[in-house]
Image (cartoon, rainbow, N blue to C red):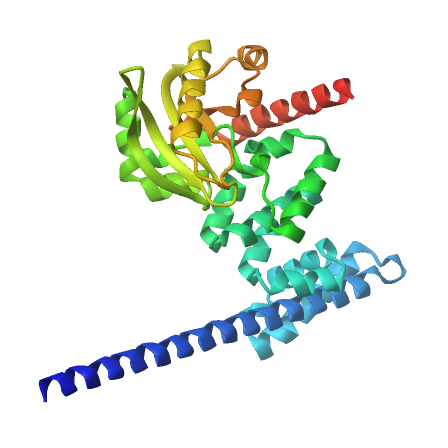
Length: 349
């Protein structure tokens, strides 16, 4: 009798779980469908308004008048969703994405709130970068905004490449879901969430990262999976320790992370090369790509890195910021780095 009751309860529990899953899936589909329908409606409204305002080169005053009058009419009947501010956003949306086929594809995966965050970006390559990374990593609206505000695009290696290379790699991600190393690694990494005091050690950074591991992985990228801390490796009866060890699902390789309190030094490259060759020999399995090293340091000298040719050794060197600087200063610094890097590409060509 007891066994029968247990079996009945198991069947009942399984049934409830299955029905709940069906309901949740249906709700998600309904939400996606509603969002797509509304976003497409907003695009159509924006397109129609742009057409009307643009007729016969109408004066700007006329544009303000027609949008203002329409806002009053629609708001009375349909509510604040059709305020003048929102109508102008719809117009901007339609102006930014003029091809309806692209819009239809876009609204299947991004919400209207996502779209509001992306339409102010004028650079089409930068815009495509954020769209594809958002779809790839399934960012929430909050994360999406944070990524844009923290200048993720400018911090990735891809932004420092010629435009044709950027377009090619974004297209590869879009069409084949192939993500390149240059789309993944950043410089600098912003670790303001660690809450470090004025003075701290490498151990403090490491401990803070483990406490805030989820936020650290979010800064690295969603495909990073944490494996180990202070990974012990033995070479010729000597023990060495890798600060942090990760695995990247898309790149299919191990990622060794070393934390350096001061500036990058030449010896750091040799240390990382040793770790990578050991991992390649003892930890890599069939089908995996060679491991990549990421050295995070407080500062670095570009000429050192160029002469050491760290890229050829599969080593990335990046600065970390424990406090988010003034965005204007960060923007100026990153744009300067991008311009210099692209000039070097042009000179080589």
